[in-house]
Image: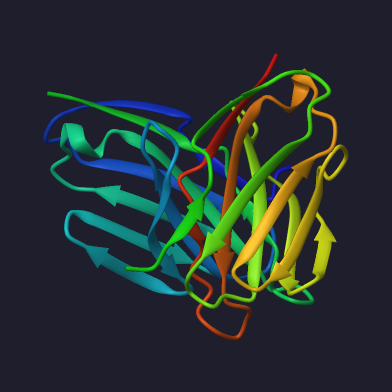
Length: 111
Length: 114
């Protein structure tokens, strides 16, 4: 049983397209994270959110706590957005130190 | 700029060798994590440490041990490397709740065991 499910697993888009990646989770959370991983390995945090919506440049993240669902949107996609996007949640458990990860969405943006 | 640094980006070891993966963070974080990442499986927690000398097993601790003698350093040890431990290893750190829970990752260490 996966605590965090992402869709789609793979996504190919033309440059300029609007992209949506979805994340559903089944545990009580203190926060949800969107992470980006470029080829070569390093993971960077894009957003941490516990309610509502956050925007950073062309990236927008939303979360619906009641429905246990989050979306990551990329507007006017660009080839440099090509990466793996990972949804992660921080549990609200005993210590709140457990993170659960989705298996990632591999995005390729074609020029 | 905050940083999590992993000692080696790429390692090639032979079956049975002892392997040390080092991770250092400069953010004074209490929490440090070791994950392994395999295609289709996502990130899986090997061990977690919430303070110096304190550790907890994650989901896949078998074949691994850890050491946290100083707050900034968390080491992952493969006592006798096996081919099924070929993987990408990622170290991360964070503050404990209720502080901001952003998770900071190192660049990863890609280990190949022959």
